[in-house]
Image 1 (tube, rainbow, N blue to C red):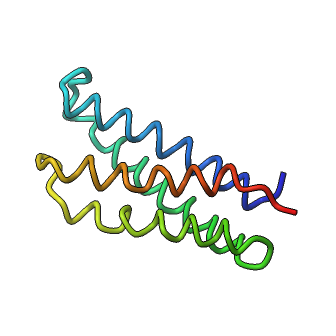
Image 2: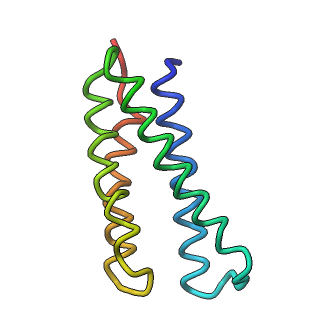
Amino acid sequence: MHLSRSLATTAGAVYGTTALLGVGLATGLWRNRRNRWIHHVGYIAAVTLTAGTVVTSLRTDRIRAACAAVALVPLAILPRVSTRSRRHPVIALAAAPWLAAAIIRRTR
């Protein structure tokens, strides 16, 4: 497996885990205010891994790089949207199909 695909897969796994954690915090299934930082660390890791996917894919697979770059757009907007608004989860979910496309992309 290429490094870029490994990074995309890891970014997707971290993104999914962070999203589930965010849902748990938002719905009250997980109540622990002292550990909300874990959600933030997951977000930072997902953004970093997605950016790494873009950089490592530029030479070998430009389509994967483009998919990951598009996923970075909603992730970049996300911190500027209130977590209590309905837009926050919608914007967060906008990255999912692009991350999935970056993961399933086959290189030749």
